Image (spheres, rainbow, N blue to C red):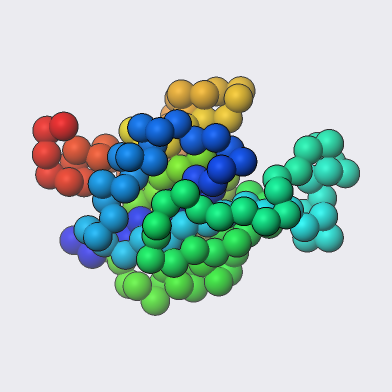
Length: 158
């Protein structure tokens, strides 16, 4: 199956757990990989004005993905989505930070384009509201149905 992996906002300012970095790295080299990095530009997404919080203005991905794209806000940019379309995947695996917000927003964007978003449930963490990401996983299953695990993707039992 032709797959691509979208890695959402695994960046220093969000303090990802080391197991998440290690396990996402296990997928590198198995398929094309794309990472998003959330950076602040108040003129594009008014985080500070609306939430009193903002991501850093400059940031980098902690995963050595094939391509890295900056985004401002919750959803992936058109540049990210167009890149994924050009890869012609049968499905796009999604993992990363904030299952119930940025990861879910990526799912909606991919779904609307017919890219069959599939959440890798054990490669995602939620926000401070829901650290294990259980709410986001339930929402994903409800809206998009397709979920998997790292072991299933790698064809292993662990």
